[in-house]
Length: 135
Image (tube, rainbow, N blue to C red):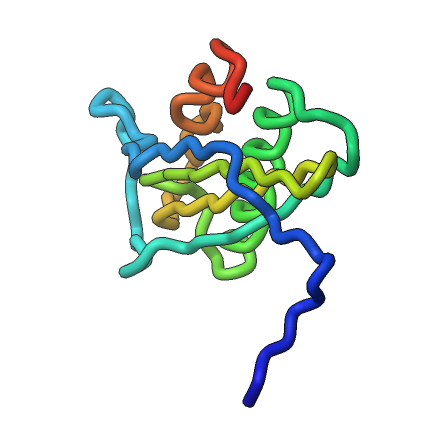
């Protein structure tokens, strides 16, 4: 099998990447009755095309929050109601004047009986808010 590539077509160039390793989302103070935990993490990859508009800090935050929301919807389908570990990777791509954000969000699903723990923001979101990434 041969792969052909158009001569004039540019490929996506990686502008920058932020990676957050798995972080426990449960405090020692939380008194939770964890019934079951999935053996492996669940992961989702989400791509956001920004077109020719340059990305802003709020774009990164919204992309991570949306990715987490989508992953949470997936775990709920499998009868889990919380994530005990969460991690994410955000990559910014550029092709000419077009930009694209890719978020890989992963979490370790668990089922907690009774009241689920309060939903906390994704770990280390301040990394995205505190500086001009990839500029």
